[in-house]
Amino acid sequence: MRITGYRTLTTVQDWGRPIGDANGVYADGIVSVPIILVDTDEGITGVGLGPHVQVDSVFAAIDGEDPRSVTALYDRMLRRTFKAGHAGAVFGTIGALDTALWDIKAQAAGEPLWRLLGGRDRTVPAYASGLDIGLTDSELVSVYRTFAGYGLRAAKLKGGLDIERDRHRLTLVRDVLTDAAHGSRPSLMLDVNESWTRKQAVRHVQEIERILDLTWIEEPVRRWDAEGLAVVSRAVHASVATGENLTGLEQFRPLVAAGAVDVVQIAAVWGITHFLRVAALANAHDLPVSPIGNTPIALLHAATSTPNHLVSELQDLQPPVGVSFDLTIEDGAFILADSPGLGIRVDEAAIAATPLRPHDDVGEGPSVRPDQAGRRLLVTARAVTRPAPAPVAS
Image 1: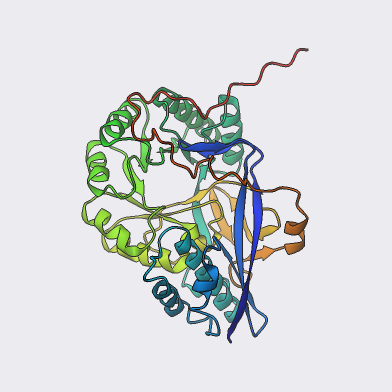
Image 2: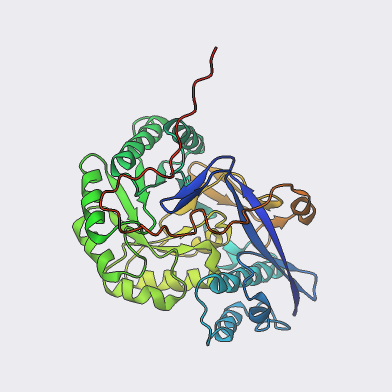
């Protein structure tokens, strides 16, 4: 079997509500989802979700190769980007191609990837994550009631701009999940997306912990601040979760060595081989791992064979336009199916026909760090929240 070419597509995810974090919000809830399709001479096509940046250059490392040599081809792609560096979106391109190769390998074997990787149980525990900082209280409650209806008993909220509001919103979601579980205590997490200083992180988490049991605080300070993350971890009861924006195994080593991370996070967009290697590093230090991302199906397969997997993020219950995943959500978990490969199906006609378009303006939204991030004297800004709608006259 040989790799013969690739194709790229871009579809959209329509959340049907505002989504975002402390850095910004997409008010219409429409975001782009890039896709790479890798073709072979035996008619098997693999699917990877991720960027297309420098894809011609990266693909040259695997063109004509046997796709089943996936881990060796991953290293070839890394070597291909040696001088310029493989960080950021280029690492996402490598990850998307890597994911497509694993999909091909499992399809060729006639097995779902979770079984090919040695998984025994197709069930992957999940937590709800609504990218919800732009929601009103009533919208927030409605979103997490829907998640609770699928049996989810753990939730991660976006925050970091207003500590009193964060505490209030966490309480609202705690009550929703507690009611759904008939009194059982849920797990609550808060993600502030690198918006605090070290001292702010300690003060604010300690304040929240006076009234709530916080399972983890996510990215309280900058992703590379090993000393700062360790300071926060030692000062609060909650675990510190971080790692989703780290690109390359070498970026995790200083955090692990400094005791700066309690829950190791790996983004779905960086690919399967990266996840497996980081998970092995974390396991060697008795640390749990947790996949991050809106479309984490590839890492869900990998998580079934990972002994230190803790829980995976579930952001949206609907897939991107023109994309389907062969899995279900039941009793608070992802349930993977038996279709060969990853179980991803792409309807190119549906993607071409959709009138929805992603944002052209790259100067706004959660991907752009505000100039005042980490420099707010008081965490009381409410710039990304929306007022409640006016009551309708009867």
